[in-house]
Amino acid sequence: MRVEKIGLAEPRDALTAGIAAEHLVCADLLLRGWRAFMTDQSCPYDVALECRGRLVRVQVKATRAPKPTPQRRTLVKTYQWHVRRAGKGGRRVYARDEFDLLALVALDTGRIAYMPPSRHLQTIFIRADGDGERLGGKTGKTFQQFGIEGALAELGLGASAEISSIAERPLARARDRDADLFRDAVA
Image (tube, rainbow, N blue to C red; front, side):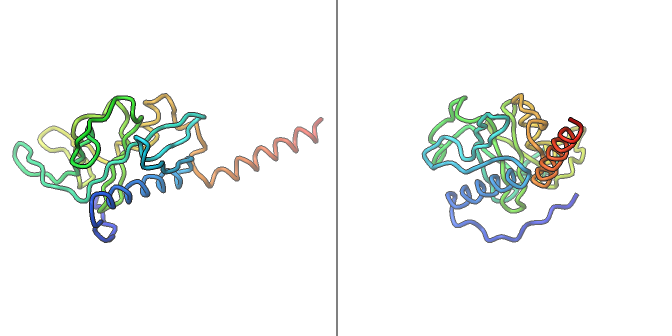
């Protein structure tokens, strides 16, 4: 699978890159039909997601481009995120209860991986080529493996918790209205 760069300007600094990533995550969630909003800079998480009446705290991490990562016999381009530390220069370590999910953003392509709590490691690597090609008997992590539905399922908030698409909401309202009209006609 070939992934195209989205052709945006390089963010000026780390803060600008982080803010851009937060906006991408919020937009991705909203376009998928979820209720999501960005939080204030004083919050320990970046985006809030409402799912089944529960607030899911999402910490966003950004990387600008893939880097060559040494493997046993070759170099593989991967996106890399250091996810245990916060603040400028990684001065602070995140507490276990500061957020529920990680959203890892590749700024050059706009791709997002949503990592459930079981995947909150020190450093996360995701293959840049995106095809999950077997390399020496192992498959690297890909963006396709880490959608929002799977991450929410690990929190006990499966995809059935919400109407999965904004386009389906008017249809759901119409079905409810038709069911009400049918009940009234039969009664």
